Picture 1 (cartoon, rainbow, N blue to C red):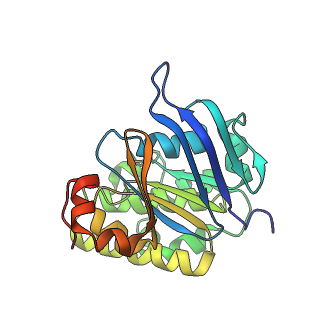
Picture 2: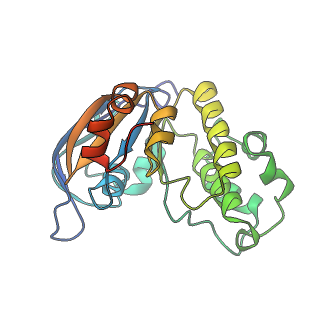
Length: 239
């Protein structure tokens, strides 16, 4: 369990993409245990591909992926999940015909995360635990997608656009839960997010991708405080 709690992730000279298409170009990044990092960039620059390559859903043609010093690039998705990786996909992908409780139970791995702990993080799910996935609102489905990922007791949580299409009040609620999760769990969190200002406020470190390469890797406050750089890399002005 001590190894599972580390959550050190290292990518070296990674080239990856679906089929014959190369999206990530010789990308190298390292994430320390417990670090929260915002992954930013315009549409199509490789943010989702990065998370899916780490998770094993997108093939890497060269380079290395290491989790706590273990080379995992050749590992299947299920083995990466057992080693401590968890992905919250952009499409949420909750099981529509299963209840909230059943969605959580099928993902349980007998670790530190239980159904009750998930309900404690997201009380709304406790209220809706007997409703099927297709009976939930978009915000409730996102809560369920995050809670289901946590049921594997991961050391690294990969979040792909978790705030997309949600009302501001739901966004605030989700961010509050994610902040609590970060403080209480100590897990490594990589957040892909289009709302740059929100992501930079949430994560102390930011990585910006441009055409599959790292164009910025540094403190979020430095990026947020440079409107010209924000505009050049992201097409938005600083707050």
